[in-house]
Length: 309
Image (cartoon, rainbow, N blue to C red; front, side, top):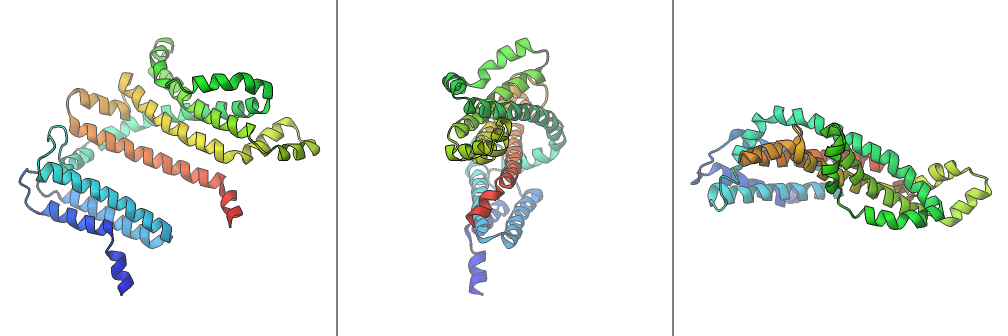
């Protein structure tokens, strides 16, 4: 019984109860009780409880911490807008209003998501296909490495967004221009991480493979690449984050659809409620894509977990 009570009295549950009291009590600044809003919070709490029941102890703590942060942000937002009126209602609409706008605009948001993911996926996978082989090849050839490495240090430091005007001027469509800019942004982190991993690869393993007369392409793709996969995936993660930043930046400059365009379009009209909806939706999409990337990363590095046991 004591353990059950202790499990129930955690920070996330306490913040949820406090938030529910704030929502259900009379609001001096407006923003009455929204049943959908309250149901969403209850569903989030139930998701936390169900997840805690099926996951390991370490993951339970993580879920509780994340849920507590989410409830804390919503509670602070509710207090500063509906209760205290500290924040400007024009720039920071009530949470209930944001939820209503999100539900009303979900079709429009998802219609632009497909266009954004197509641009992102095309550019990112092109960067993977180009950067990993190039990094392996340049890192394998010492003379080529000495020539390319200083250049890569300079080029990787240039913000890819500066190429947007030339990309739009030289390429026939905005989609191709966006793909080019995102490709550049994703290419350099993946290339540099692959390059550094190849150069730092254990020379004893290379010598042992040479003793077995392993061919060069087998050396690169069957021995070195699996061995440096953690470094490569780190660069892939950074490249994916850069890709999202560049995608939204490019769409806010010249697109006619997409998740970045949605935020820019409604900001031009001063509709900050829909701007917040767009920001929240971008956060959800980024979280989902990064979660999927982490699952792929875990699969590719499953041998590390086995070796640690």
